[in-house]
Image 1 (spheres, rainbow, N blue to C red):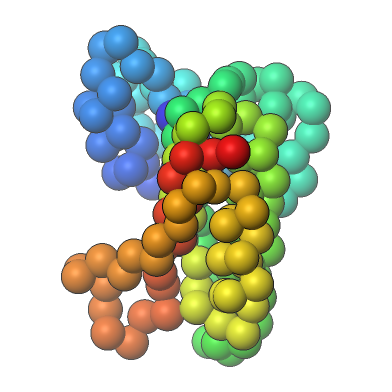
Image 2 (image 1 turned 135 degrees about the vertical axis):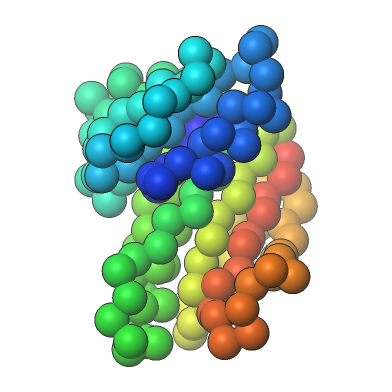
Amino acid sequence: MLDLGCVPGSWLLFASRTVGGKGFVVGVDITPISLKLPPNVRFVQHDVLRPDASFLDAAGGPFDTVLSDMAPSSTGNKFLDAHRSLELCESALAIAGHVLEVGGAFVCKIFHGADFKVFSDQVKKSFGRVVHVRPKSTRKASREIYIVGLGKN
């Protein structure tokens, strides 16, 4: 599993327990991680908005799942925040296109905005099934929603 935007590390630790001793998780973030990581987890410090060959080599792969829980620093301007969220999501999808194995899954948090449908349609081009999930724990005022792509083509 590849966890993009893994800091502070809660999804990274959850993924580590989920894959167990036979699985492996790579966490990526622009910010250094301060957690003691389990043996089946590796951390790569990198800016996912600027993925390059060295990043793809360091991340490794192929992966069966790419998870992006990234969120931009909020400005309070819902249009700007949605646009910044979209940029992160597009980068995550591009990375998934390089490292995700056929049949794999893509999970991406996005701020619902004007380009939500356009991005969702982009995900649909690469996956057999796409669903939108808004966890019950999400605050009512939040614009966060997850796009889940299953069965990468």
